Length: 156
Image 1 (tube, helix red, strand yellow):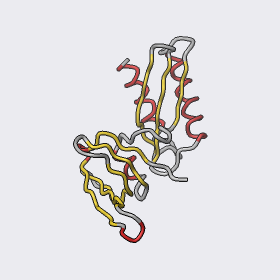
Image 2 (cartoon, rainbow, N blue to C red; image 1 turned 135 degrees about the horizontal axis):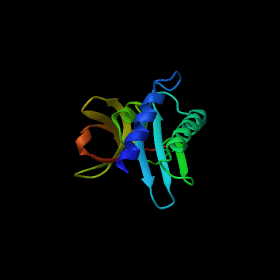
Image 3 (cartoon, helix red, strand yellow; image 1 turned 120 degrees about the vertical axis):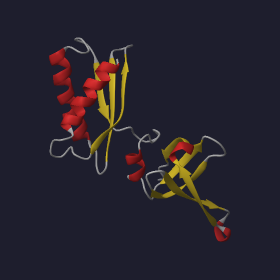
Image 4 (cartoon, rainbow, N blue to C red; image 1 turned 90 degrees about the horizontal axis):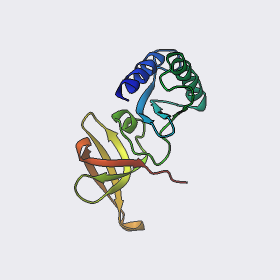
């Protein structure tokens, strides 16, 4: 289904040129033949709300139906990746500065801490070690190629 992914990506990139959609970007496109399900995960540099997702869903549905890409019965889901989904793109890291991340490295132990900086080739994580009065902050410079998986940790 590479051709379908390319067609959907082209449609989305065209839609992202419209006013109000300029800072949206594609995180992932998944097509599952079992159940004829197409999942589109989007994100934004600022805000992605249900209105954006709904309008993009209708826009894609119109084109999918018009061209018959998925037949008559299919499931289309347009959403943000959601809490607990790993970060995949540098743009996602940039929008999560000053949030806590849990990072699994390709080698070594996982690191959890506040991401304070993002560059083109690495991030900086400040990890707190110790207890109360004896807390120590350790800065980790982690290049993207060292990251196996990174998840934003939401605290309540």
